[in-house]
Image (cartoon, rainbow, N blue to C red; front, side, top):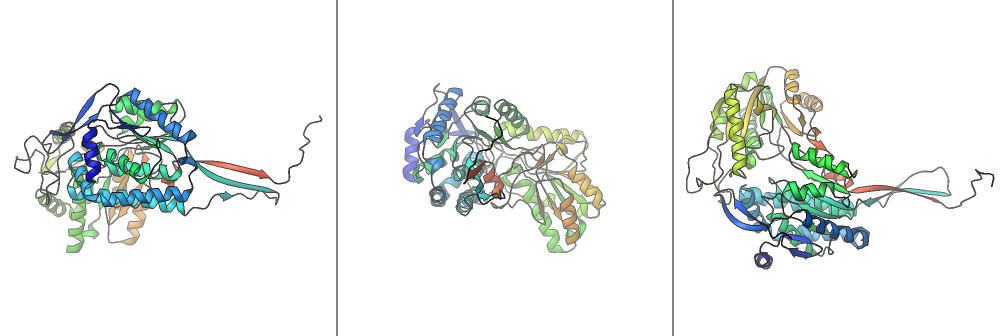
Length: 509
């Protein structure tokens, strides 16, 4: 990665890539990228706007309408995706470190993210390479050849969030390229660096000019223009409910295909029988910590709602709080740190507001609930917040109903299976959830009743590239990953060939 890093340094704030060129913003505007561990700037990027967005969309449109990529053989597209995966493996350490510094997560989380990104590119390469060329439709006559084939959608606009910058980009870029599309991506304006690096890898892997384009800039200009642009055929957005609603409204004017992965308020339901053995108890507590506090809770699938059977509640919550209080907070790039800062001062202030409202509504702090004391590995200027466990919570509390996106775990209790299911489903979101029980029948029964797009049984947070990721309710529409993720970036065409045409003779003439 050394040579490419030097190239990035030389080009400075020319971080808009359109039609094969690295460009500064047309307005000349720039944005400092801050390290959330100390709030100090460590990179500068272009602050693009509508004009820059139009230029990138025009490049993607030309590459799709007159370029070679949409018509490239499947084997060629798959081979390129595999080359990208190899380059990601080559640059794993540098990219993982960059992801850690940009987003605040631990460097180990950053490394795992890069592994998952490489897996996504390989998965979609294998998926598209192994497909049949089309689905034959029986027309009832040997003289008719009828087949349904898949074609790329066209120009895809991708708007990605700040919490998993490169991973979320890969979930969109890999299937879009596998299907033969061109794209313009807008990463979050506060964590764009690894997505910029990915564009370099795509170019290095041999992707034709104009297929991959990026505009760095804010959502209210770049994102809004992408959603409404008449030359964009599909918009895929991952982020918050309010912004996702605006994207859907803007896209509706030109009747684009829309894929939305929005928020979550995810239940982690623990039955008493899961804790009957010491090993079972320890595992359930450990996974509850993982569910709530990985990446400081800044995860759409975070298990921020612990719903625990009343008979084991006190023992479970006491141990959970004891261990949460011992989580090592610090700069994510330091080895041994278990939890990094929040991504921004705005995000920390939002977390503090939720905790304050919960306390006003009767919640009890079992641990955390404040900023930590500064230390050499935790600068006072950084956006740190202690992992927080709030006990005695109920459904009328904002902190229970709304997505916090911070290191906050709420505790609710139940007595019966029906009550557990009712609590878990009592949310306007429906992204993910988990069930912990030693009873296999209950596990399948409860999982079947939960209205969430992903349900884990005796686990939390794993995902498979082969599976489909999406939610119910206000968690969004469309699917990512798996065959359905590829289908989002395709259109179906029915080709009906009459091998022995005859006059119809419907009309007298």
